[in-house]
Length: 377
Image (cartoon, rainbow, N blue to C red; front, side, top):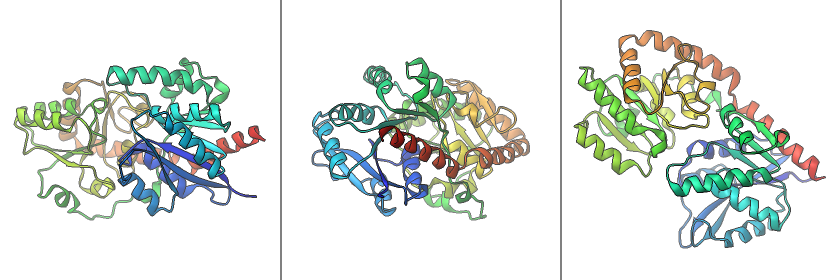
């Protein structure tokens, strides 16, 4: 009996949290029972080379390109169906609004079980908000909908998805891959020079909803109150020019550093003193899980699924979103008493090890695929 063929569809250039989950699933899943394929959307004329596809190929995950003249070219629906037929795909697994729409329409033309993982809806502009409204309607027609946090689970139920099709599967990480080894110097190598301690960092795409502008304002407040820190924003994205302009306007060029996208940021964790996640919205942040496993204290905004990882005052600190003053207060509190924050990080490490191990997540996903195949039979 051949393995169950699953086609994951993802629209991304960088790996990111959802992309990392796809790749780690490919590594962890029972290869005797499941074979995962990756479908990536690219424009006509583009090579398709990216950190995401390069890593997938390095892991021997079959990569297939779905090409279109624009973001929602209807011809891509036919290409997905061609892949389904040619590769004998049993399940199509979508991961964001674009792949949700194309997967849903493709399944109307060629019946195949479809599942989506909802990592969080991000509505920065009118176009995105309209697409979210569309997505909330079409996900009702998916055979299974996976929410990565209880907050998203509530939103999905409110959107009209039936409870029997909804599954809660938290994000997770490969815990044994995160161990302190005492090696230092990677941060200076990435930035091109050493930086002043303490080092505050934030990992994530430089996009409006990640709240980096609030964090830069918070660092300005901390500096004006006489405390010296270094801020490293790890990632890239559309907000980068605006953030650089903000840094220059505040005179923080020697304080805030933007090294760009780093594929394996965990090698820097040895030298980080505090991880700050200033997001306006979140699914369930992998960066919080990674930081706690490396015993780096976490300061985060109370949004999305973050409180399912960070318990305020026990495993980290939570503050309101959209508040540079609250972020600055947390950073100043860390500077005043780093030992208590390290104790919270140690407790957080135990929680992550017990509840967010990727092997357990993979078993849950395999069970969902089994449900779909049983229903299809």
